[in-house]
Image (cartoon, rainbow, N blue to C red):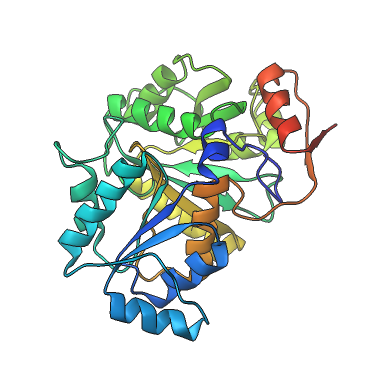
Length: 317
């Protein structure tokens, strides 16, 4: 994945490019601004009068609006639409996260697919040479080992067809019984997933800086080139993401995985830019747009990866 644009466009996301964005509680200025700028097909659910009034300010007259009376009805109908069209992307607008998730996780009419829903934050960090994905800083407060395994699979499957390198983070690269997350990391690194290298426990510096690994004389196949950082818990992931955004000038796109479709579940107070980037991430895997790609060809890159890169007109050096 190149720093200036995604080359890790998954097979699933290529298909999803032409599918509908379903927006629950769309009567929100930042949400509608992002939806209109993203383009493509969409269905807006919520207060019809408010949606039309805000849309007029952007010079838009959206044709597909479903008027709903309250957030519970909105969430239920949005999830129902996902089932009816058998795909798409689901987005939360001006409603409580718990309300939408309740409909998503409904045992009879929901769209849960994995045992665990998890959040990925995909960041464009100026000092890192490609996009970096951090999981899970938004859904699971204190994940068990089994939940961490689900979180890992969710993230890797999001980039299906692309070779990814996963660093399972801990305070140190040494396994220490006093650090339970380091023991989990060691076990997670043994999981076999196609088109994926998993290493752990790794300290943050070793995961993102090859020189740090060399100084510590630590042998790693992914040091300085990690695609996915699996954090020990929601607190670590949340602090890491916000630190990179506020101190390192990173831009972020996010999605919730583990349902039948990606879910855009950004904060109600998120900017239009963050919402737009998240829409692009979920619809076509390119939150920062299209541009010529350059990636480093490592010995682990296989035929599947090269095929994916060829599809996206990448230059392999």
